[in-house]
Length: 114
Ligand SMILES: [Zn+2]
Figure 1 (tube, rainbow, N blue to C red):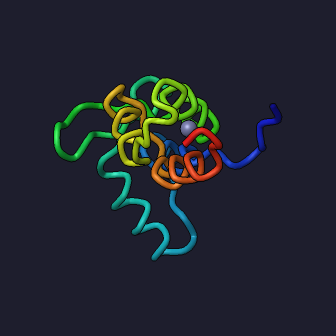
Figure 2: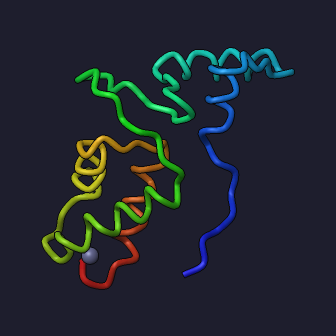
């Protein structure tokens, strides 16, 4: 399977948190700064604090997230599991990436077994 090369969504967060990067666009910078309030960097890894539980979720690249969804889905395929359930299982195993909900919906829509 080919993995699409796309920009790692974690890069700007890590740059902002560890290097105090400043974006040229002030509005964009403000948005990123607000979003980064829930993130911390430990070592070189980015973590997100879960809003409800405070648990630290390891931030993973989108392609790893999609692989994780496939793994979880393969155990529940055909059981008409909602995409939200897939996502909450992924997050409960303490992994996070921002497009999880859309990625789970797409996976289920494309699946012939569901
Ligand atoms: Zn399926």
